[in-house]
Image 1 (tube, rainbow, N blue to C red):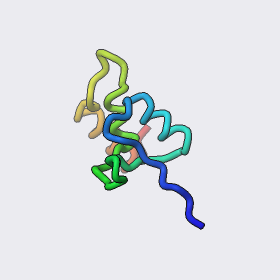
Image 2: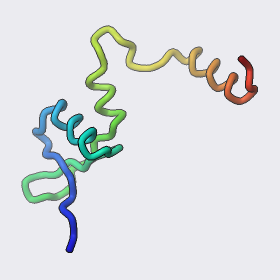
Image 3: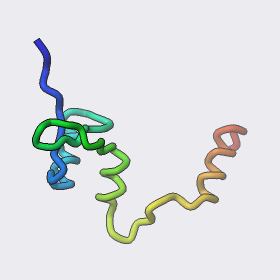
Length: 77
């Protein structure tokens, strides 16, 4: 016996895709066509990028990332 694969279609609304990822605790979900052929995947990162609040930056500033890495590597406060 095999379990059905959790998937979404290309026309599934973005919030519904987010709900599928949340409900099944997935990091990614396959996107399939009507014949169940895989078209691609949607990741948690994709969902967070699309559903971020208006006015929020798309990416962290590079200076912030560099400081965080330095602190982690050196153990600085």
